View 1: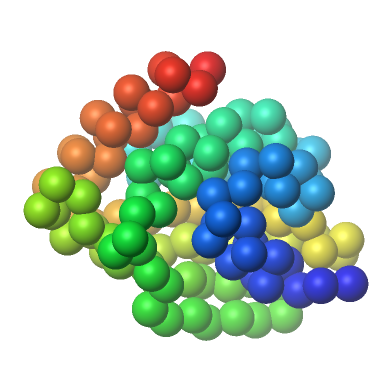
View 2: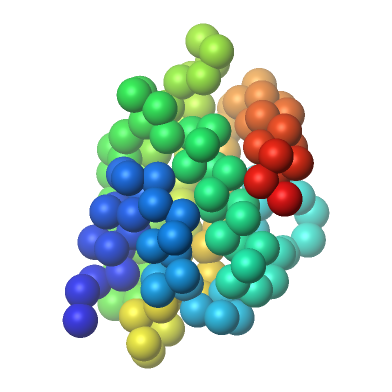
Length: 128
């Protein structure tokens, strides 16, 4: 069985939303940097991650640091959108079946959060 972070990197680098079906647990919980309540379930998490692929995954996106444990990982990323440098982390937990069951995104600085909020809102409206 492949390591879930290896699979995540492959899916994320391709922006492969369909690949998320095999990687995410049915009861996955997604924590957005701009939405107050956790989003529960595969469908809504897939929607948010698909939108993030479209918004964040440009030519400047890259993971710059990883801390990987037995069932958790923190992946630090950077990217630039509209001249604004974005720094963030994906905090990921996976279950016994190597499926991601918790995915939290944190972003800084505030200017980046505001930009992402606006762009993610537009993308979610298009995808939803």
